[in-house]
Amino acid sequence: MAEQFAKEQPILMPARMKLREYIQRDFVVIVDPKITQEHLKEPSFWALVAAQFVPMSRLIVYPDDNSFYAEYLVVSCDKNWAKVHELNFKKLTEGANEVLPGEFDIKWRGNHYLHSVIRKSDGAIIRDQFKTRDEADLWLKGYVKAA
Image (tube, rainbow, N blue to C red; front, side, top):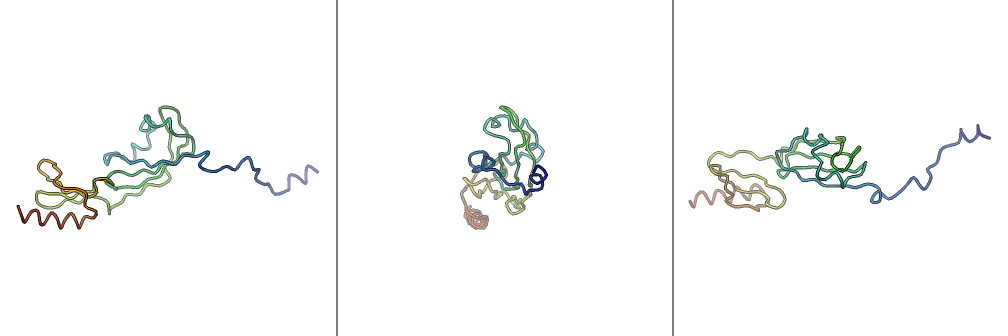
């Protein structure tokens, strides 16, 4: 009889299955564009938020300028550290800011400010909240012509 049980196909017990929302946490983390891939792998980077994590929490990370997209899995954590495993890290060129000749730049400044026209000499924001880079560029051409 014991031999027959060992040969049977294993089955999943109901107590081992739960809704993901009850046992796992998912977070979207929007970081400063100066944060690097190496910073994200460092357990101390997560010190101020680690208390919210549980093992197997999933972190989706991207900076304000959308220059990369990353996914991490929390392997272990405590109140002031979290060890993460990198599942995915992709550099994105479309969201990256390119430098314009002249005295102004157009930069993506995140989902709140969107594309912004910035004066290079002092970093002053001339105007922001353009939905597209082309829209900001068109406005900038008019602004330069009027000035």
